[in-house]
Image 1 (cartoon, rainbow, N blue to C red):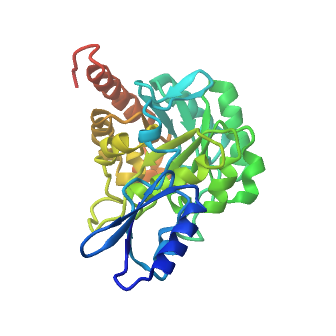
Image 2: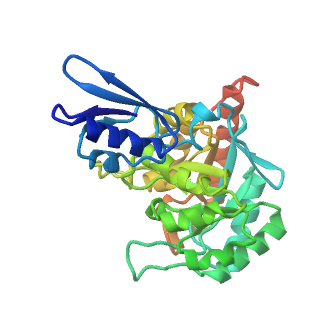
Length: 340
């Protein structure tokens, strides 16, 4: 961090500022030039609030020269993090696929979908027990009953389950969930993030609708700062001025995040596009960009789905897409040729 001192600041004010900075266990280096004075900070500055520095009387400007996230930063953790759940891995060179319905509706609907995605080669089963919806009149999910059905589907298929938490008060209901998903609307629910940071359970953190990559990483930092290093980042599209798709899938987020963080990266083409016909090409683009996992919505009867049917694949469509996805994965790993 670099702090520029005002021209008219007194020696006493600068001395007081440096004493305050030393309370954060950092070293200070005061450089006096012809026209200005600058304080350089050496050490861990993540706990220093830039606004608090700017509020100090002698400070004219302040700039970070290092990212404010430490636990999620590749600079401090050069090796990729691999999340292991029931013998399955997210990260570490292989492609994981998370698939299932947007909402858990009925036992029959979930079981048929779970068996279909497993047979097609999915590694995890996703399903919404609690559903954040734009309209208060839309289906909000089955709640605890939905989680119970997911647990039942796991017993039937052996697939670890992924489902979204919406409220801190429901945390106890997720005790037997394999991966807890935090949706885009809750990406900056810091109270919830800190509580999940005190749980020894993987967290799939989705990027907010208008969030920058640094804001996503700072949300991951909230979880990790509480002791939970099992964080998975998910790019699910951001809101832009383009109305043709539900959101705009930021494929560039994959290589950019790869440079900045060691955490696994997931692409959700279903929420990103909102159009079933775009799921396959966007999935292939994600694999080519180097994503660690895909999260794809699959429904046995999309036309009659209780939520987000337009962005759901049928089991047959999912099976056909999985063949191409796995072919491209093998090609990207240099194992075999490609025929898509």
